Length: 209
Image (cartoon, rainbow, N blue to C red; front, side, top):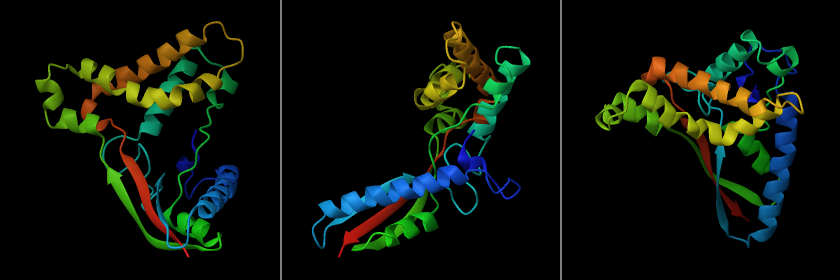
């Protein structure tokens, strides 16, 4: 589903294509930005990251993994006969989360760019915090209401990927997607306090020599 899910037990090919393409793209981006900078000029790059602990967007040391939840809800469609075997495995997110070392390596590949600093920061999900602090309940939201409030923040950027996993020309594609997101709403409503989408970013400061 996502290259970030590849772990030590995964085959060597897992995420290899995404990693290689991401390195090429990052080099092109840095080269273009370097050409725009004057000597002494600086820029800040904020990128989604994968930490040494294996934490990344939606999967940290707090709560359930958003990606595991996505997978569970997608597999439920298969169990219900709403998607076939090929659609079950066709979800592939076209993004890559760089580690700090990969960012540093990318910077070093561009002549004239100097790494000033790099740090990593986790930003906790405000939706989960709203539930665990009691703010969501105080606002009158039931567990189901809270789930319906939270889930769209994950849907806005991911729906096209799930939709593209369906066979072309399916007349019921919209209905299948509504069922998928309904599955996720139901899952979150069961235990709102463990579901959220933490952000993990690297913050990099570069200087043109």
